[in-house]
Image: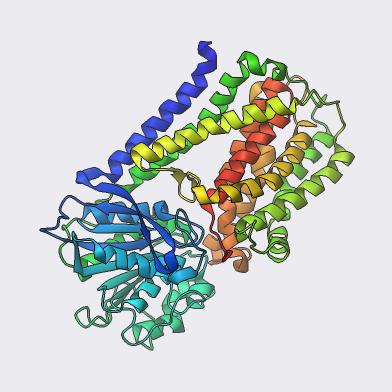
Amino acid sequence: MRKTWGLLSIGAAIILAGCLLAHWTQTTGGIRIQDVRFTGSNATPMSALLYVPSNATTKTPAPGILAVHGYINSRETQSAFAIEYARRGYVVLSLDQTGHGYSGGFAFGNGFGGPDGLKYLRSLDFVDRENIGLEGHSMGGGSILAAAQAYPNDYKSMVLEGSATGTLFSPKAAPNFPRNVAVVFSQYDEFSQLMWSVARAKDVAGSEKLKGLFGTEEDVATQKLYGSIDAGTARVLYTPATTHPGDHISFEAVGDSLDWFAKTLVGAKPMERDDQVWHWKEIGTGVALVGFALLLLGAFELLISRQHFAPLRQSPQAASVRRDARWWGSLALTAFVPVLSYYYFFGLGGQWMPASKYFPQSITNQIVVWALLNGAITLVLGRLLVKSKGESRSQWLLSLQIALATVGIGYLSLVLADYFFKVDFRFWVVALKVLAPERFGQFLAYLIPFTVFFLIAFRALHGFLFVNGDSRAKHYWSGVTATAFGFLCFIVINYVPLFAVGHLLIPAQALNAIVSIQFLPLMAILGLVAVFTWRRTNNYVPGALIAGLFVTWYVVAGTAVQFRG
């Protein structure tokens, strides 16, 4: 009995330790964090995290900053910036854009929520309305520019983090617009063409568009002040050595924004730019994410030991006699077909499955099409390469019950973390969030195609993976290699050119390249789940159902809604 509780207990302890570290970091110095909801334009429900430093009171209002995440991210993505701003005495409203996180509406609506966020921040009686800053990453730059355009006299300065004026989603610059802007554009930003019309981010200083914003005919000098802060025409360029998503975990990028607000806003606590602690929060929530994976496995191990699930228990049977050419071929195809088809099938997904009432998330739709087409390929290749060994009893009802219970225990852990510590489970771009209630219907719709894919994939995986005489370590190594190694290679092949010559292997696929980074840890976790459940049941169904539930939850909770409704 003690053994069956062991892994679950370890996972829970790791989650608790990570959450405590993250919570202590983001509340250092007496910072209070509130989950705020308010009504925006067109009766749109809006969501944000409000960071209130101890110096902010109705008698001593503090300067405020509206911080906004980028496309298909959420309010927690900006936590590095929000924590450091709050430590320096700024009240920070970290906003969920419309159609993102827990905000209603659809992506791109109502100025991305930026004007409503600025209006709400200024309504707080402990905020100094004469000292308001705006900070936005990527499409969040469009959000704060929309706010500045709607309320041109209600802010003093802004930071465009990996963003630009005059893109598809933001207004163009004018002689006095935006007011006192810092452009933080990283040396390896994947969106240099979209943002500043240059092929390489390192060439941003020579961008004609940027020179127009800075009012100069010469290349823009980094960290040089252009214009006048008092007149509202100040401009400065920072170029930290990181990537577009890397801005969120860059001491340099965070420090650049701190420097700018220290110069342009009044009333903050003076602190050195290098005095930063946000990384401990990132480490804490990353540790909690690892603990969550262990908790899932531990929950399954505990449940499978119960008498109710006894019919599922069965020792694993080897699917292959040895690692021959057929085995290695099956492994290679399992690992590499999904990545070789990634860009093309994503493109088909955008054409075949636009956002609709029942499937309202464009990015999720692309993943669905990619998954189903790969499922079809797996069915064909499975008949050619994988020898059927005969299936064990599937016990579908019990498999569904144990899958629901396993993922339910994991979901409960996240709900408790959110309630007690105001954190989710995340590291960098990989984030597991509590599902917004209004997205439950979307979850059910997407659950069907994702589960179909994993049933096909896990059945094929277990049709060859386990070799006679394999140790437990070899079995897990084979599972993780089959599911994740291809994406590791894909990311390396895409990003080596970025750091070597200044652009991705296929620059036009910048968004999908960034999205692919999440696949690596997720597919590794799913490889562990597949092998762990198989070793206890000799059955692919329980693991496939767990994978369908988990991935659907992960994607639907963390991706934007594009359908207008």
